[in-house]
Image 1 (tube, one colour):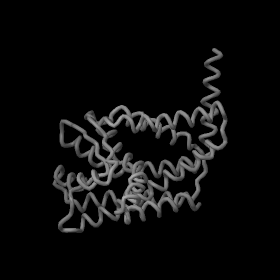
Image 2 (spheres, helix red, strand yellow):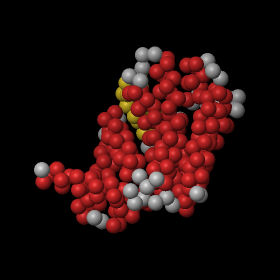
Image 3 (cartoon, helix red, strand yellow):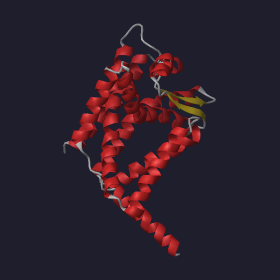
Image 4 (spheres, helix red, strand yellow):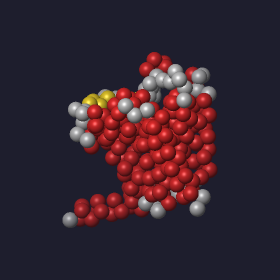
Length: 256
């Protein structure tokens, strides 16, 4: 019984500290601008490495959108692979990919569709829950996604490092009550939101160029056209609308 109450106290302390995260528009917008600039000028080795680091979280969210939706519709996830070198990104023309399987076109439509809506949803949730002072929910969602990522990826070393970092942070918050770690979580939270916002804006720009370029590259919009016979323009418009609505609502909360 004593252990039960102690665990309850630990959870309460964790929720209390995770609920203290405040939105910082300066950090969010600075990271957003930096993300877009790095994406534009990432041809050098150093800038390319920094850009890959900045892109990791939003790209992972995109791929988790595919993977989670595959599981939800009864499909299979064989792997989530993050492309971490410039050479591999050039050769594969990807920053990451989810290897999924399903037994019907309808399931593949859902799996493909959910990739581009995952970052806007995560951005909106992150700002909304901070606005409502319930950021602990968002952070627990991120931990849950990290555990799911560990379960399905073949690059086990990446989620292991991240889980160790999260566990260390939780230990310092609960046991050591380290104010530096608590303040760092607030900073990281805003950084992640900035990365998501930057990725969404960047995706709108890139998909717009691809959609209206007659020699456009293969992307999720092309896959949706092949699956549904509905023109790429429709899927671009739908994804762009969802992204713009998310940005609009986020800006309203940030400046309210």
